[in-house]
Image (cartoon, rainbow, N blue to C red; front, side, top):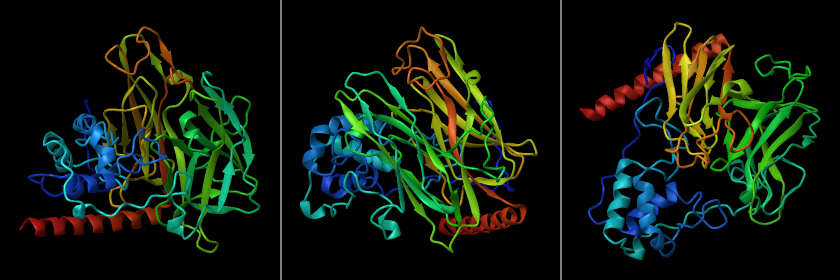
Length: 449
């Protein structure tokens, strides 16, 4: 990539290498060395009634898959984490990637015959919610969200073509409420087989220009995005003192993509919303933006070609970028998000070098590196598509590909959560970030002495 990397002190978006794990053991066993890794990095998906095809919670479940696990781990296809570790920000709250030592430990264990080890070394089983439990409820001392909004039922027939279901459902709110966390999911375990993705768009009267959207071709405001679900994503928790605003009279406009599940399946999608308690409303408003080539004119991919596209988004207020989620389809190859500062300097924020359509991963920046960007910054999203036979997921490299909802069409955008701040708050946040980075630098220097 012919690009400049500029680390601007005024933005204070530090690059921090991933923390190294313990040294690779001489003779790793499942109970002592492998099980802890799988509990931390794999079981979220690889457990009964979850989205993975097999459970990896016990030695008996893991052993038949040992050689396959080695292949997927060695190629870095599993766990799914496609951020390039040589470019951009490297600290994330939800990093599920394996460290180099963890990879080496798994490979060494398989090559040694995958020994079980002593059961007294086995860690206690990790407690997961059942397949249809709400994942965030317990942390808020609840059994379920404060508000659950369901789409209307849809039946996807066995063998049917892909379908898009777009019902509109009122939230039922009689007063404005601030949101601190959101979960979204198919309503049943079987529903996960057919739900490719589900977007909950928010229709409400907006007076805040930062949250207003352009009008459609009929002159009506386009619904703003509230939350998007896809495989590998369950929800989001707002950073402290920030939240999303759900207004009285609001409605959820669903956009649900169903695919063939091999049998007749009727399902709904559920949106679980957790509110800030009244009197504890956050100071900052967070908005989920769609950035990149977001319309039919933005994607034009000739047959047998690798093509890049780009789109731009101007920050009309000072902002903290909270997360980055690339979205493309089968020809998607890579995506980069850059910040072009008002000074003309460019900062590479994140680069996904090996996009995988099967995993729509959200990369949630850690508190001390979430980019702080001044008003007037341009966010540039560059997407690369591989429409050649070299792309194993390409259904047909001999056809022209344009923008569209179908899996065989393409998209080239990113979902980006942004928290907006006024000048005084932004300067205070910058000062706090500089102080934190200086403290971290001092600690690192002391450790190296």
